[in-house]
Image (cartoon, rainbow, N blue to C red; front, side, top):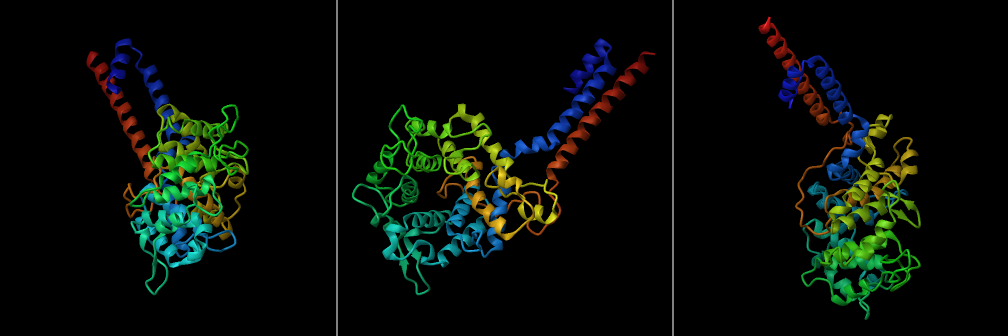
Length: 416
């Protein structure tokens, strides 16, 4: 390309003008590629690595478990984080450590044998975490004496005659149960799949058409994106195609706002809902939806803490974390354990939407890498690899320009 530009300039006698334009264009390109704006949209190509790294380090700093803002153990967010790490394909050591910590909690998370029907979502999350760590949910260790529980059998025992699973059945909980049972040797019972497929709004004239909620089969009164996203994830994992899920996918897209966030009727646009929605829509990806998916990823990227925080300690501890929403992102003052716990809850599910293809199984092998964001948890120097790529590119371009100038001067001297 540089040679062609040189030839045209030489033939038309406009070398100086072309050289000036080339320098200006090169400088502009370098500025745009290295500017904060470019970095604000380009992290979608990182496949969630900065957030995965932040989650892994945060779990490790708290005995491998997530915490609530009140300082209590947050078992559910720990499981969400484990699934996000596995889908990202990193931090295999932390996946194992956090799953082991969940198992050591015994029945504090999944409940006792007589609480199964009330604890089906917790049991499902425990199954999915164990599968992410390549452990067998059929031999869940209950306590130190070596007794075990078959968590698959637990879920099946909580199944009602109509196929619903739980004493308080809902599309939300049923979706987690089916995702877990899909990993069982015998798969998910068809009657339970049929129950979930009968839940969405069936009125084509309703804004909630295709959406899932909590009001019961066919209801359009409370369709929400979180339940719908989980239902799509579960049914996609069971082999349903995008065409078969079209009404639900259309409803889910209808909840996206102009900023790329997905809006929950309970709390507005937020990272958790957006993460679940993007994960579901990518589960049976449609190429004509790529621009909308990109908008959703950019929304999550804008909620991600990076190197722009003025306070060094806050920057060091939070880089890679994803805030719950825009208001939360702007409210940051300085790092606190309470705020870190809040970010763990939002980052754990938001990460699901940043990976190329979210899966709750072990189909994507995880390596041992714990990715850095801009800083690691100990506060070492920022990663400068990307900067040097742009610096190197600039040097190459400038070298080409000087080579052209030297060559044209040599040609002119030869003609004198």
